[in-house]
Amino acid sequence: MAKYSDIKGFTVQTVSTDPAASGISAASWASGENMNRGNNIEAQGSGTSGSAIIAVGGQIAPSTTANNAEKYDGTNWTETGDLNAARNNAAASSNSPYDSMLYFGGTPPGTGVNLTESWNGSSWTEVSELNLARGSNAGAGTSNTAALCFTGESPEGGASGPHTDSNELWDGSSWSEQADLSQGRREAGGTGTSTAALCIGGSEDPPANINKVEQWNGSSWTEISEINTARNENASSGTVTSALTFGGRTPSKTANTEHWNGSSWTEVNNLSTARSDSYAGGGTAGSTIMSGGETSTAYTNITEEFTAPTVFAQTIEGQLYFNSTTNTFKETILDIPPTSWSSGNNLNTARGFLTGAGTQTDALAISGYKGPPGPSNDVENYNGTSWTEIAEVNVVRLEGAAFGSDTAANFVGGNAPTAPGRVASNESWNGSSWTEVTDMPAATDNLCQGAGTATAGMVVGGQTAPGAGNKTTNNVFYDGTNWTAASSLNAAKTLHAVMGNQVSAMAASGLTGSPTASTVNTEKWDGTTWTEVANVNQARYRVIGAGTGDSAIVFGGTNYPSTTLYALTEAWNGTSWTEISDMATAREAGSTTAGSGSSAGSTLFAGGSLGTPVTNVTEEWTSSLSNKTITVS
Image 1 (cartoon, rainbow, N blue to C red):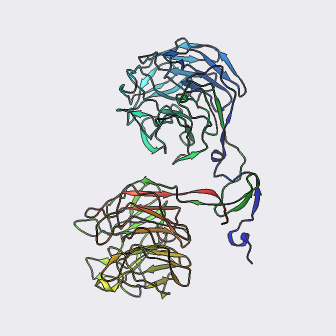
Image 2 (image 1 turned 45 degrees about the horizontal axis):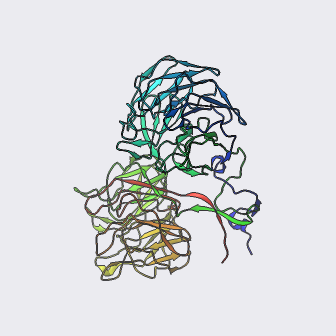
Image 3 (image 1 turned 120 degrees about the vertical axis):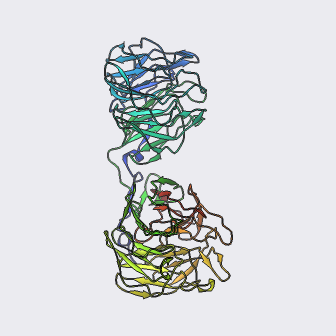
């Protein structure tokens, strides 16, 4: 009998804690020493450590603002020098060391102010005022000589007050107006430096929580992403490449914590106590603090500390282990069901009935139909951020198939409207140009995608002659030079999802029969034969897929004879199909990462048909590794 380590390359281990993707994901909130009084804290400075803090201002009772400040040394809170002017709803250079902070704006009840005070470690000094008086503002900065003040309400008037997009820079002696944010808001989270900051969430006009995140690069703000949970009055910490946002109002108080890794937000371990109005943080994403704030019933003096371990076991897909703390066997796998689609950058040329190959970060979108005046020979390459037009195919066509990578791929079959129609054409891509090579055994169109690599590809089904009765069960392999017929499908079909490789593949849904109809039929390839397995839930055609015979997803498509477009995604776990997250844009016949890049955990859908018009929309699907308990029933 083969050992698990021989099959997967891992030795089964006994561990006391689950492996983690990063130190941040392994971190949790722990109780710290309570503050001296319950306080709706409005600003906090902590530099690069969560154990050297100053918390200042805020509200200690309804309509009662505070001027007190407390210092935290990682163990105890001690009262220190008071502000000159009591106020709340203010902001600070929250990433400043505890002995060098700037505190600005805020609201004595009913109005916003432009006051600025500088802390030198022992006392507060009033310095130059903001140009725009405001409250509920956000801030960033690393000292009392370099800070940023952005957003807020001016004048302050509660939830119905006018929200501002104003942004001001402090140079150590005065405030200067800078480029505004793209959206005005109040009570957003702020973190970072005066030249590289994040504005996270907040509330807009008319009052509604938002999930938008904007980044400041020293000269302008750019919207970069969205947090998973829209909120305001959230606390934030860290930098533009590694940040946390936590707590806030959703509108109820929340304990939710999210981490930004420079490209996306991921939910991590939550606070123990749901609360808002703390605007705490500062420090770094891996060492930060939240003190005071407002729960659903009272102002609180609770302190929680977030510390990421520097030593931890890294998650690796496929590892099997025994957790001795919980007495459970677990496996680390791609956690597909909770995944959702996110926006990617658009294709340069909108089109449908195209095909694709590669991976989510190195993809090809090939040929297709761009609407009047007709077909497109465009090929674009996606690097995970943007699409770039590259060398065109020789024979422009619709509903062909592709397999391989962005540097070694094949584009086969399809319908060439300006040539003979249905073709057997096979073009090879070497990373710089397309070359005609050995044709398929039979001219075949009504395909959506192929599977495998440029030297081990496969094309399944399709239509080899006019008429509804000429759908095929063909299954042909390509070795980089020649084509070989392999075992056929059980049911002839066209315009179906194909995903996997020559040893593990799926063919799902599509059109079958005469008269033609959409089908739920699904077959699995084990390297030798096709076997009918559990059907997909929704019959459709011009549907796309990614994955293998053991783990796959199908998405998009339309129905026949109706014209309903689907945004639906279904996941295959090796046994059954489950409906999961929808795409933002319902469509059919787009480009995906079929071929060597086919993965149920990482793919994209680019372009496609909306019925009559075509689109250039790109959506990305990215699953994360998760530790799953193995159960026996």
